[in-house]
Length: 503
Image (cartoon, rainbow, N blue to C red; front, side, top):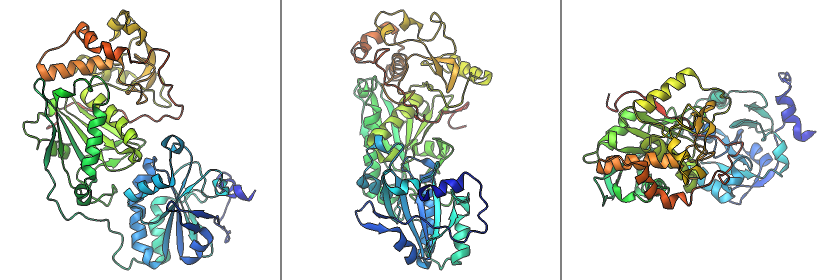
């Protein structure tokens, strides 16, 4: 019963106002560096110890981290300690999470405290540290009693700083500030990474947010740009038509690395609900236009966000300009590649729309139907989805009657984030659960746009079929698509802006 006391308290609304002895968990672990941590000793060695329950993939956790760093830096000299606690569960199995990997992510986030990767077999799995939602914060006093808890007591994490201030007094100066860049010599510098050899050349522009002068000097920005470029060209038809693109990077030096209310980054990126992320589009376009002869309506801009949040969102303008905001998910090259393909390859360049169904969404609304019709008929977007299931009139009807393509293309209900009233051509794809490549209607849409921009012609389906023949043999058939995990979380739908980029 002792293991479950926290949950009993949480879910029964007990009146705890008269409780003076609320013991915190006391266990011994090895931190991610291999050094032992005894929680009881930590409590007694400090006036207050914060147990920070977090996960690398949780955008709320990583968004809150800068605020907690600021609190820690401000009050550590007055007896405040923080221990990061991350329980092995959720996405960690698929990520292959290890002590070393968690340490790398914690270090990259700038966490100055020690971190523990807790295995689910540990007794603590059923103690105070295990809760149904994250992040959680538990403040423990030097006597080992919990005095503040977002879980057990329902305290608000945004009140943590005031709580600590009331306990430890005014800060003694110094701490609380983030590292600030001093060398802006790299800011705005353009690098040419690839030059086209066929056609007129289509410009891909990569820049980044939350990269400080140290990140640029160490080559961190350049490394992630290269990963983004390779990801963009990893799928067809981009892979075969790579020689029609010019690729550039534009350095943007941020004052701070942290993305928080009290920090400053080059493009003021911020994370919202779920997987939503946004930035200052005007500032992004300003930097992208440093590329010589760049035409935003014919180019694609990718903002690499130096944060491990599971987040990605595309800003799409009616003049075909677009920005793909792509977080470096878990600092994983493969996971980052998925968000680049979905946001920049699919939405920003291909003008594709989402093929997934959002949790809790039923029939498509009239407003969403009207919006889609405008995007399809007026702007030529969304060739991979439709609001009819009629095989004679659906956008990919010509593929349904083709002996080769009818093996890989069908009509499946659920698209444009709605469960009913919208249809997609395959059970899965990059525009759905970010796997199985771009499906045939998506490849055709991308192929047409590449040809239109690079040589001024609009290819027919017959011409595309000749080009696509090798890809078709590798495409998943109707029965071999990767099943979509039940706990899959899609990227936020694109933000559509009915105006030109410079209006």
